[in-house]
Image 1: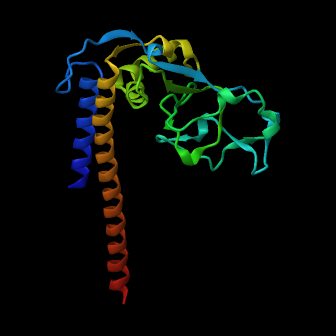
Image 2: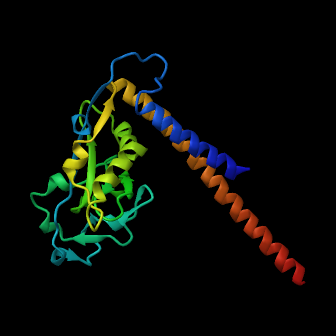
Image 3: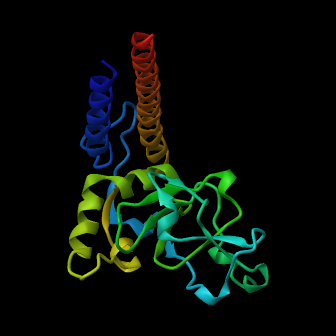
Length: 227
């Protein structure tokens, strides 16, 4: 059923990521050389500003500030976000987020991440949340998938494990070695992985619809029997 389909699609995507992001498997038509280099060759990796908690405001018109706790399963959830008075923001433009920024936790729950969507903006980034933004030589989606790949996730865990609280530094991430294909191939790989993701999302929503229907049916059966 749908559950098996979902498990299969997730396995397939994992395998695809491992093969495509390392160049073990090449997409048809691409023959350019890959090089090995630091991820910072194709991406700007930064963190947010150390906003003071005394500057936070309950005013709903304040500017949302993104903290670790606002990252939920690949999306930004601003329901409980802190806000900052607009007059505290002068000179801090470089900490404002843009659409498609990829942000991730750098302390504690290191597996937390989110892609910034248009509906989340405007908002600013707090310290200890990292931000990846592609350079001219990098494709944003490709770099985001690289960050989420098993290899990089494992390296992050290994690097962070030394501290009492899991902690990763910007330099640790900037220096991580990756396989770098030419930009056109980065884009093609990202497109394949995005398609796989879309498929998984579709199966997941089918599954939850099926579960809802099943639940409704059970309710009907149970209440029907009591008549």
